[in-house]
Length: 327
Ligand code: ADP
Ligand code: TRP
Image (cartoon, rainbow, N blue to C red; front, side, top):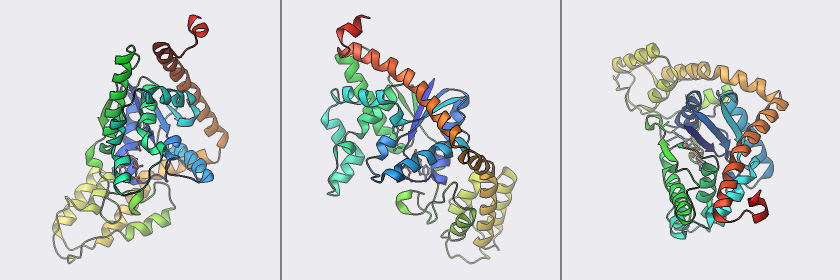
């Protein structure tokens, strides 16, 4: 199966991104043909600072490699390095019903809040469809918020296949595990929009500070507590081993402990959990040539596939010039 997923470089990655998405799609690289990219063209709908977009794009690539994405197993590339995708976007646009895009939530929400949206935000799902269709992807691992976009993609592909010939492979959304709704420092879902994140590679001192400030309830220390549903415990569970989890659960049920104790333990398991990735990231960051080579090779391999699909699509709809088509 060909598995494809993209992630926007709109901020530095946090625990939520890792456990909720990145870890799960990196795991798929062993069994499947993986295409993973950094969606910098999509990020352009929110980031207007060129230096920031450039550095977040490279940071995202470094982060993914440090976290275990292996270029020998999967293709890692930057979205804009494959111009075929933008060409395909236009063709898809001509098969996209306006009503379909008007119903998409990112656009709808902005409009309802009275914010004027640009055409980039409105047509965002068409570019995302091109991202998927350009590589004949079968599976797209995404969070719940992106499922609608995969439906749009299937709709557009169906519309093209119906008007012309069966040029597109229909992709399926693979819902990322819901168990990984990672809570932030305020107990709500961790998200860069809520300013409650703990960054994957931020300075250890800074993240320790954030961990020590995680909001907790004010029940007396002596009270026994149920570990299930407690957000500190939830975070601890993501990074501790089985025996540690069991022991912590017993501590909760016994009572007579302070949350400071749990926070310290959480900081320790988090540092241990990400130690190897942190080291790998440091090594990669000090060798920009290697990163450049990996991304160039990823783009080259992705383009080979995208060019093949674009050619098929252009033939199907009559875009290829007859002289070229006749070759
Ligand atoms: P943010 O909410 O910080 O803006 P994004 O929307 O860019 O993050 O999310 C990128 C990916 O990470 C998506 O697949 C999303 O489902 C996943 N993700 C983000 N935050 C969390 C979280 N707290 N728990 C689980 N998954 C998350
Ligand atoms: N829109 C996705 C997000 O915000 C990122 C993305 C862009 C993507 N193109 C994609 C995800 C193609 C899967 C497939 O998370």
